[in-house]
Structure formats: C-alpha cells, structure tokens
Length: 370
Image (cartoon, rainbow, N blue to C red; front, side):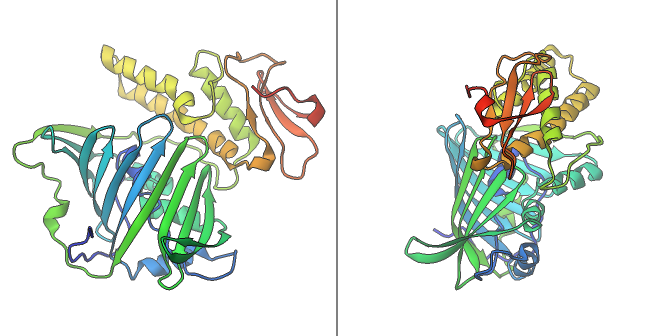
C-alpha cells in the first residue's frame, strides 16, 4: 500500500530528531545516476537529482546489536522539512511526526504522546547538521567521498547497479534501477556501533499536494502528553576532517574511555560498551537530583572526544586485521597490548599499549587476540 496521498514536496532538510529516528532516515537520499564509472561526482549528482523530487517513502528494518529488531515506514516532505513514519519493536507500535524543531511520538495503544521540542542554539543545530543529524546534510558527507562500483545484481526481478560509500565508520550500499536512476535498496551499517538498517520499497513523487494534517505535531485529543525540551549546550569540539582520522584519535578515545571508566579500558569499542559509563553516570545524577547543566556539558565533551577514534577503527578494513584486547586492562600498564592493526602497505603492526604508547611490532611477535 502506497504511503503517498497526492504528495508534493521539494527539498531534503529535516530538523534533528532522536538518535533512533535519525538513524532510520539519515541515508534515505542515496540518489545516483547509473553509469559504469567507479569515480562518481556523487555529491553533485545527488543535489541535481533531488531538485526534481518533492517526496519519498520507504520501508525499513533496523538491527541494533542486542536490541529487538525494529521495522517501520517513512514518508518525507523533502523541501518542507517534515516527516511521518511508523516503528514497531518488541511489541510496541508507534507513530512519529517531525516538523521543524518539534517531534511528536504517539503510542495509539496506550493513548500516550511525547512531544520533543528542540530549543538548542542555532549554532549547535548547524553543527549537528554538519555531523549528519539530518538525513540530507548527512548524505552530502557521503557525496564528498569516493563511490565504489559493486557491479550488477537482480533485486525482486529488477536489474540494479550497486555503489558503496563510506563516511567515518558508516558504510552505505546503494542499489539503483538504471532506468529511473533512483535507489530500490539501501543498506547501511556501522562497524563499531553494531547497527544495520535496510531500506526497501522506495516510492518517489514530483507532486506538491499533500494533506497537511498528516504532519501536524499537535497531540491528538484523548492522549496523555509528556513534553520534553531538548537544549544541547553550545560547546567547542575539535572535529577531524572526514577520511583523515589518525591513530592519535584512537589513542585519545582509549584515554578518555578509560578515564570515564575508573581507569580501566572499555570492554570493546562498540557503542554500548564505550559510552556505558557516561550513560550510567547521567542516570545516577538525574535520579539523585544532582544533575546540572555544567555536568551535562562535561559529559557531552567527553563523548565527542571519543567519536573520532571509534571512526578511525571503523575505517580499517578486514585486511588491516584490527584486534581489540583492552577489557579489564588498567591505564599505565606498559606491557599490556590494548589493540593492534596492520596499516596499509606495512610489514609491521601498530600496537597501542596500556600506557598509551604506540609501537611497531612484527607479525610473529604479536599477542594472541582475546
């Protein structure tokens, strides 16, 4: 059943949503023309193609580590910055509606509504968009990088041409129908965040008419409403350019990861492990009533310091043979290897030890991976 109702929309720009919602929609606009080249001017092609599209819809399935599988749909008014979708996970069905700085999440079964209002400074919103917290701005980041040809395959009886792009630790495979030059399957996964999202059943529309009530963020009558204010503080974050993360970013991630974990390196570089101490501290402060704006800002700074190193490790390919063995190792142990990998074209491995020193090691002298 089509999600469109005589839709008409024009530009892909959507206010930042919750982390889950952003992940679901962030890469939807993988629009690239079919051509045999493996060196596409991807960003230019996407921007030109988007000018002719005013709306789109798709279905998705998200697998996120140990969490239950999430399924749903999305209908987006591209230019007007509005979206509407459904999600189902672990027996819970929700409807969400996004409009500018407002996000409404409805639970029809319980008659509950959560209205999130973003009051973050505009500078913060601009920085979040640059980091990919709206699906159009995030996708232009992929456009800046190379697109690798995946060849041809048949999908649901249709011939498709595939392209692979990478931004930091996120990989995107986009399969395009040559006749329409639009995606029919988009697969996205994040190596160290243990998350994969698959998008199918794409529909595109060039019309402008749409029932505006579909995108109203006014809670329906009869619902219990909970209002949440999102106000991210304006902080300075040094962000390494895309594709230029270095081993020093990984060293800093390990340093901060151990600092927030009581002097012990995290169990892994996966999101659930490396950010667990900060999440727990936040919950403890909120329960005890000791949470302050300054403490929240400090934790946000620490979290952002760890992201570039996670990205560096995520960019390493299988042939780089990356291993992590830092669980339960204390900072300062100069003899304990925390992680190691083989740089491109190198005969030796780079090994980071518990004292955060980095040394070259021959393959025969490597520690055993745990």
